[in-house]
Length: 90
Image (cartoon, rainbow, N blue to C red; front, side):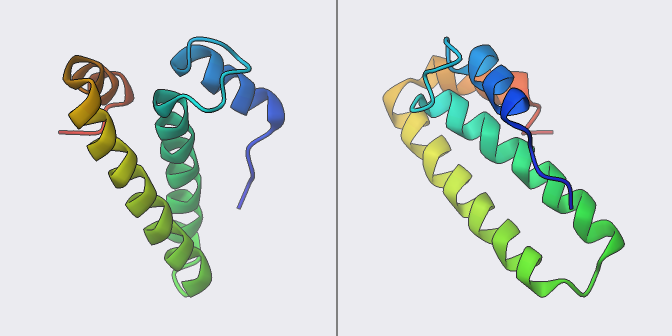
């Protein structure tokens, strides 16, 4: 499983969090969780019996879901824009 580099995280927060050092923004955190979920999902495609990573994936999905719920209550337009940008809903 490949991990994210610091540069990748910085670029994610720059794109979604309005500034590269604004690591506390909800949009940036959701984008970070989405990227980590993609990495772990790719890992689990090849390593089907890695149950520890599967559990970590489920925890990340739950965290992202809670943040998305919070964002939807706080800023519905921002929520819809982020969902569209991250391609989360089909």
